[in-house]
Image (cartoon, rainbow, N blue to C red):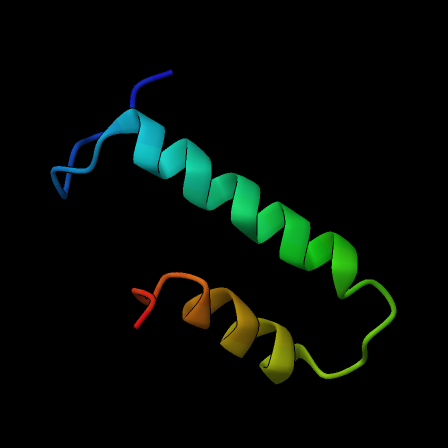
Length: 49
């Protein structure tokens, strides 16, 4: 599968982010608010303080 490299992001980082998003989606199963799910996914990418 060919994917163009738009941003220089390592494969390990991308896989880790994908796994985080899948976990959030599993935990959010049954929630009706899609905006809440979107915010949860966006906040998982923020650096911890």
